[in-house]
Amino acid sequence: MKLYCFHVGSIDEPMSGMVIPIYAYLIEHPKGLVLVDTGESYELRDENAVMEEKDTILYKLQELGYTPEDIGYVVISHLHMDHSGYLSSFPNATFIVRRAELMYAWWPEPCKLGYDFRTYEKTHDFRYIQLDDDEEYDIFMDGTVVLIDTRGHSRGHQSVIVDLPKTGRTVLAMDAVPTREIMERGFSGRPSADGWAETRSIRKVRDLAAAGCKVLFAHDPDNTPDKEYPRYYE
Image (tube, rainbow, N blue to C red; front, side, top):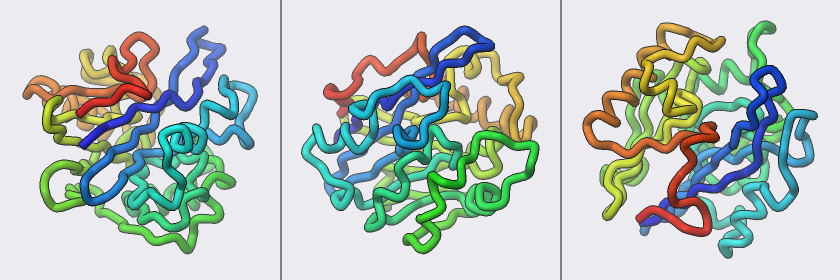
């Protein structure tokens, strides 16, 4: 098994003065390829996006020698625009998502930002595995790629635990715990769909780290993966 960490652009946050990286991941498993999120769309990027076309997940996969048709599963951590930009490019894959996230994204509350319907409007008839809120899902039924409930940042957020032969259990925390600082203090203090559920999810990931799991952060400019594409974890 291999785990690739792709830096697929960044977000310029004027209020904080920070440029926040965006990461997506590819898991090479003997039984198939698993893509975790698809990053921001270059074509639909807004004024805060910092990216070139070569930063997109499609370009990264092509560099690695893969086409969208090679991807067996697309795991959707959640459907915010910086994670769902190229979902429509994988019509032959099986999408794994929390049912609550699907329902919320297709009919979001007016006060909740982050969704861009254009990034997933063509995916309605794709093949989905829809998970319940608190369901754990073992993709290959061998304990190597397990999806866990980490809702709170969004209604149906999920994270991924990858059990790699050499690196060991590695948590792709995504936006449940976007930075090490948030993990260490145990709460985020940012707007979320459900503040209490978000705090519970942050502490869940913190407990996994305390138990020896490696945690990879999707948006931490100060704690990027030590093995970034073209390097990989194994």
